Length: 172
Image 1 (spheres, one colour):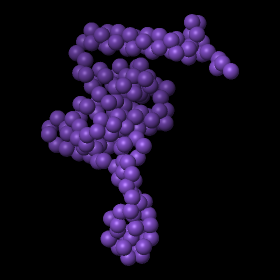
Image 2 (tube, helix red, strand yellow):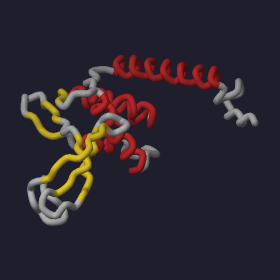
Image 3 (cartoon, rainbow, N blue to C red):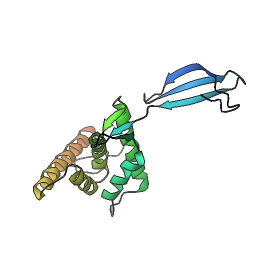
Image 4 (tube, rainbow, N blue to C red):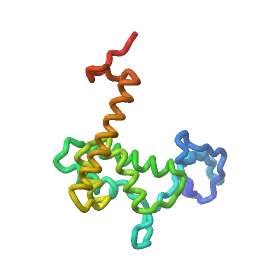
């Protein structure tokens, strides 16, 4: 590690801590030459194994680009896409491994995209899951409807919504 102050390449680690989310290591360092102290943050490099067997570094922007196509014409903002990209990367990092098959990245995208926009989810999943017929769409729509019904039931149980489907006022 090069010192950011004097560029000397001999630094000493004074303290190491795992970040709260477990995805990075924070190290406090001291330069052996100028004795300046600085902090580094080390992240695990995520690698994607493509169908061809080739490997490449995970690129959040590349994952978002595929989702962006599915969201074309939908009420999805760039901020929404950035949050989705972060959620996908967090899910992959949270899996505790450094290498993923390309299809695992696609699976990591499906969950957050389903929460973001139903139509974009169906578009993306139709390509990702290689739908062959209208029956495949019907099956996926049924799964989506069941998921939405479960979400609604959970919100009612949690008191987030009342029986009219209106947001409950906070008590206090």
